[in-house]
Length: 458
Image (spheres, rainbow, N blue to C red):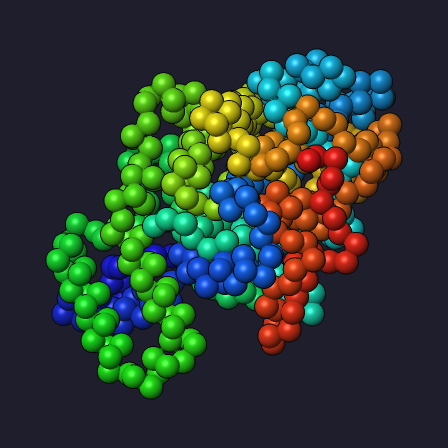
């Protein structure tokens, strides 16, 4: 978290704590990776013509029901098919749920993969990790998030961080803060910049992005110069690799905090009110709008964590029993917000000529049980679920793979999380045969052996 304010008891006379003074030099999420980007490009790890590609990962925290949204089974028994009816989309043969009417109108822009699965535990924490890294935490190896890998390989292209999480990191979903959300073994320099705020609020501002009112620009510049004095006083330390990393990170953080571009990119008030309303004046809708603005301003990878809680009616975690919601509960609150925000994002990217260079992937930790439970909900089910993709080289209007007659397991073209990560990396132009600098300096494969992009998408 970027911070220039003093929050502890031991402060300098200028109002900044020793801890904060050091923190600004060791910030994660500011993307200092230009040297790694140049090295990766020179080594051929990034394909020509893909430098402008960005990714928006919409992670549907809580796990939507594929059977009630994207992979409906109208001919199955009532306890399988659920309460909703399928409707035709603008793609012949592709049916979607009646509670996603806006999706149905833009189905030619995205492609469904109905045969995803994994063998990890059916708990949120495990699903969050494996679906965002392609690997489970094993043997002490904390694999970096796809956004951190993108940050490492592509570097920053503007004053903004290359990897941003909206509206906040996971961790309030009933489990511990999981591995796989950050830089992992690549280091904290590749952690995301997490917004930690609700952009739909009237008083929305980015915490700690800009110096507070009691710290003037002159005082901020004085602090930067004070840092230079400290640097000169430790000449021997300056010769080390860690010192170079520290200085690059400090410069990136300072540049972001004082950047007009960064301030304006996060300022949704610059958007016409009718554009904001098109996305929906709620947290998810405004996060989608903000993601578009961030891509326009050079952010490489944005993760939108939709509906952060699983313990009330605004959730995908439809167990049915209190405090969770039921399948029916999706109809009135969650799906209207989601349908509006996603469709507005895709249409806006098309209108602005941005979709070809922006992969929008919709992921989740697992699916839901084929049978409706006695409480009118569905429980966790990693054995089968749907993901979908638009832009970034993806050919829309396809249905790839298929589940069995009850949506319980893949029947055609099974797809694992490693394949999904390979698909994201392929869209970004990364050589899937390349390696990252892993733990203890050992080369670590970008994707595991046998994992490939979902080639039908491209």
